[in-house]
Image (cartoon, helix red, strand yellow):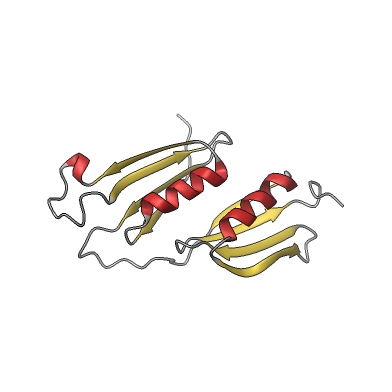
Length: 140
């Protein structure tokens, strides 16, 4: 059995919208289960929140997420980022544009000291992203 490390993101009630955005940007199949579907909440405001979601993309990426249950003390936008990197300039730039749309560009996608295109943003749901495009894949 092979091993893999997967990012698991927490949201304050926006998990469905965030995970759907990531599916729309990265492609793949999204499966989501609400708290109500597994009998974990009778609270009307909690029933439709996401207890667990997993996105598996055609590129082999796996991203998981969930809403924080009421009463839990969780911080959104904690000290980690999801990193996308590779040589496919067009796809990575397209992902950058869609993830940064409506969010905050922390560092514009531009040529970095190491020669690659690199940028950092926080999407509209509070997830931090880093995009690195290998100089071997850049056009121009």
